[in-house]
Length: 155
Image (cartoon, rainbow, N blue to C red; front, side, top):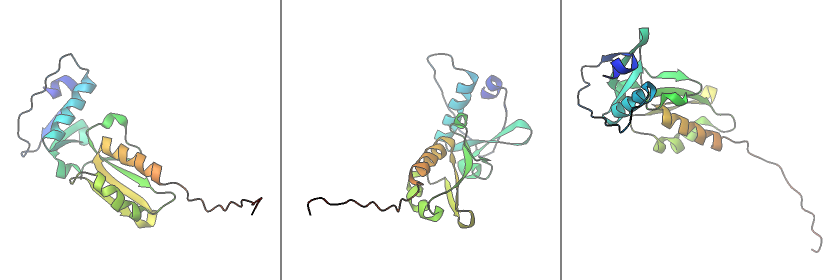
């Protein structure tokens, strides 16, 4: 049904089994239908991985990490699709961020620090990668070592 609606071709892993019922009170666009489909897959422990030749593979989440698309910035349209993003830490140490970020991730997600480049490699659902990226941006700030001298008038 989703293939027919979106014009996408799918290959199903033999382990992908189950039934999903989606009810909508109003018509949805092709884009919205695909995002709903990705959310339904996520709820069942599966994910969609773009493959060669425009074919999308439906696989268990654990294997979706290996085929996740990579980019420097995750598109907002990726939604519940598994992606990998590399984030270079500018003002801190990537290895110090790992224990802070890991509790914010699902057990099926992947987080690694690559010390020579001071970078984090995050594989998770796109919406969570975007959230983690915002957290890293908020934390990765320059540390000010500026000294301020305040003259005293009555002491």
